[in-house]
Image: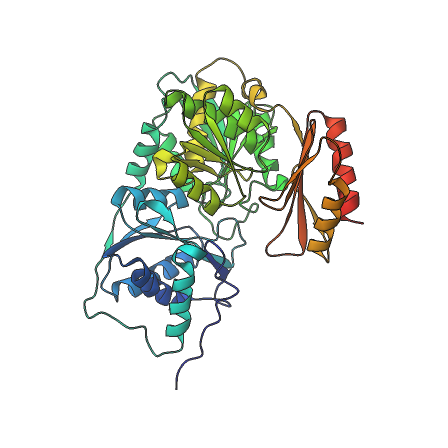
Length: 457
């Protein structure tokens, strides 16, 4: 009797696979994903890596077995950050699969897949075909094999990954700094010691023990409650700055010497200025439409061309490839570099911040003031029954106002001389997400409250 056909609708997302283990997926499905990934990429060889979650080694090995059964040679790099897997994919020229659920709770796991050179695999670039094959094969006794069984080889890439990152930033003039790093029991505890080892840093470690149950706090630095320990430790130790990494260490959040969080938009602007200087003062820089006005201003001031995109890493990576952009940044603390195969790496952004701070005598708060010019609301979520209806009501309220422009590249962006806001529906929950920015605090507050009154009417 044939097995029951798997329903993957809940776990195959727009850009990755993610769900609860073993309730929604397990090693038998991971093996089918490996076989399907081998077929869809058509590769002779692939590379795999995994984070510190309890289920990750088993899922990763099952995926490797599935690919090997299709005649594909698998290089396993074992414990790694997501950007370390992207490095391996780019450096070795192989499609790759990373087993992680990033900042999700411990019972979750997932797969981030890419083609050779870290090119993303999403719904329109192979993920739909992979899902269809896994669903088809799940109803049969076994996935089809090719006759030849591929090899499984282990390879350590951590030192090569660190050397590549360090080659992309000039750290030669850096003064000694004290930095608190909160790894959140995630993969930053694995990568930071090797990457930072050659630098004149005193590192104060927080939660470097790899523990996929996240005993201290969620590994999501975008949520302010997860920065409290880092902020306190920076103040307590008199550190020059603090860095917080998410669970798979592809995102990095920065706090200054006062323990105050620095907006990812300000980091985007700072890194953009440095990357433009490194590239002779020219090049395109990608920013999504809810980064600060500061970002395109700084990019233009430093000779670059700002390119505005929708929110989401697949859109950023597509624009990076299309425009040949040197750098891209998002409000969510994802930073993308042309010299890192257009992939995102929080570690490289952190090195830029360290180099910028260490290359002068002032404080980090003083340094970033130049890049943080406006007042933002942060993202405000409202639960609504009728997303489309509330969006239409907001649009109607502002349409036709003098000096106000509206665009719908991604949700609804309403712009005036002294303020702007973006309103976007969540893809997964009955929420509308509002981001407001203005030239001063009173204008931001007034604009925010007016928009929220319409949204929540």
